[in-house]
Amino acid sequence: MENTILLKDITKTFKNKKAVDAVSFSIKKGEVVAILGPNGAGKTTTIMMMLGLLEPTSGAVEVFGMQPKDKRVRERIGAMLQEVSVIDALSVKEIIQLFRSYYPNPMTFEELVSLTGLGEGDIKKRANKLSGGQKRRLGFALALAGDPDLLFFDEPTVGMDISSRKLFWETINKLKKRGKTIIFTTHYLQEADDVAERIILFHNGSIVEDGTPKEIKEKLTKQSVSFNAHSAVSVGDLRKIPGVSDVYEKEGRMYIISENTDDILAILFEKKLGISGIQVERGRLDDAFEQLTENKEAI
Ligand SMILES: Nc1ncnc2c1ncn2[C@@H]1O[C@H](COP(=O)(O)OP(=O)(O)OP(=O)(O)O)[C@@H](O)[C@H]1O
Image (tube, rainbow, N blue to C red; front, side):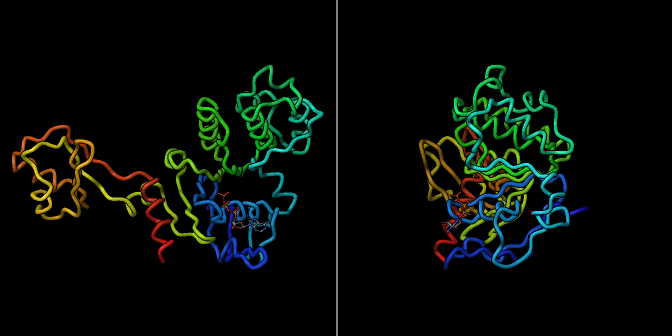
């Protein structure tokens, strides 16, 4: 399948600081990719290089097999970056129409309004009269104006209320169904877990993990069996069960950590301990993320 994006050994140095350090990856058409990592990990810098807004110090970036700055590339890209700066003197409608005019095959105005949830009242307003959330919606509409094949969103849901967030991700799902390639960053890991097919995890300018949310969680988090604690079952006894890596009691529940929760459940039933309220859980992406970035800090 055609690579939409190809990064070959990209490094970006600001003065003496390596913001991005020898990063390589490719993204295929139609992929929905979350770029995650703590503050300062190099996410925005990488996105800026993919957009052709920053030049790499070394390495090469290809988008649709061309240089990111190529006009033919620009016409197929939409981006919503952290700062939405617009022309204050124009109305929302005028700004959207202006952006539409830059592209050969723009989305219709009506579709842009409906996809981004801009209301009747909003489109008449001048840009400088918009609330933070309305500004994000306008930024979203401008990113979609050219009906692009490739979309970038840098922390898109910051400053959005819950319903705006829901609408935003619903629209992303619609765009995904249309075969668009979508790359986004977020600090809300649940969003990445829910929406992304692939997560590229950055830390200190390098990629430390690249895989599906499921793969990353399975690799980095442990499974647990928990049940309502009761006096007949002690932490010490549970620790003796083969395959148990840890046992602890928290808020009235007993947790058993193990790589093989099926075996643990079988043993618990066999012992007829009379336990209740059983749950089997896998750690969340937050846990994986925390573990990974903490470990790397120690190295
Ligand atoms: N224009 C610049 N001049 C100097 N240093 C910069 C510049 N832009 C970024 N940096 C540095 O490069 C590193 C990576 O920054 P970047 O903005 O890419 O991180 P990020 O992962 O997007 O972080 P955040 O989650 O905070 O947005 C940081 O240490 C940052 O201070």
